[in-house]
Length: 357
Image (tube, rainbow, N blue to C red; front, side):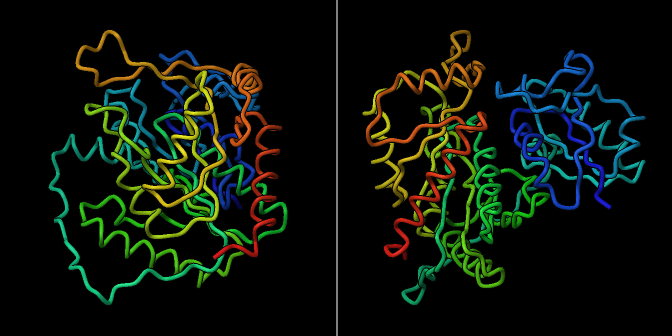
């Protein structure tokens, strides 16, 4: 019997989990919790991402409802910055002997709060005998251009499409809950303070071993962190993790998830050139999220962005006004747009199969 899964707190990232809950393996979504002071009770989770109705409503957190569940996934929401809220719920879940799963975001916040020691740094000596193994299946990489770009929803949409099309898929997700959908666990060393050279070799080895073990027909990699910094005070990882992963594997097709804006095609041309020369990957597909971002005028240090929520109809109308010849734009939170895009991705891969690695 599937374990009853609860999510706390309901966040934009977790909307993808709700929308693709049918893909969960061994778990069934039971509750999407929020603190009662957010006044989200009985509202559809689409209020968090602006997509079409998800047919699941948010529930005010309470202990009696948690008692009904077997497993609790805990994420961090910057709008709920009081860590005591998380700690109290974690302690309650432990007392109830519930299975606990933490996102890397909440782990980091809790570790910082407890001032725990960091892992030691290890360096890998450059060696002329080191090689990158060939991975002989088509590879799709899903990249992000910042926070709140619906990257995980794109990863789940691709998984759903290709599995339903009869393909055997291996997958690593950008979000920590991916393993509940049958994704391979993201290797821990990606987030460890190790030398980039060592990480690149180890990720290549990890991907090669995953494909050798699972024998898939397609490998989908959700790449964590943004592909570039926003500015010198908003670093967003500076593209380090994407550089490591994209250097470790040679993808056949990449998708970039970015915020909505009134772009010209030159914007996507330049972004594609950046990805080509920094990550050695071709990008023609761009997901425009139901979010636009602007610098926070009240933040004089320029270390914060304002994220303005939109809806799929608005974004799709904007996409239709953008006359693109070389770039494929879509909105993954619209079911038809997501379906059309996945079919187009499949067409690209199958039409070019003879030219793949």
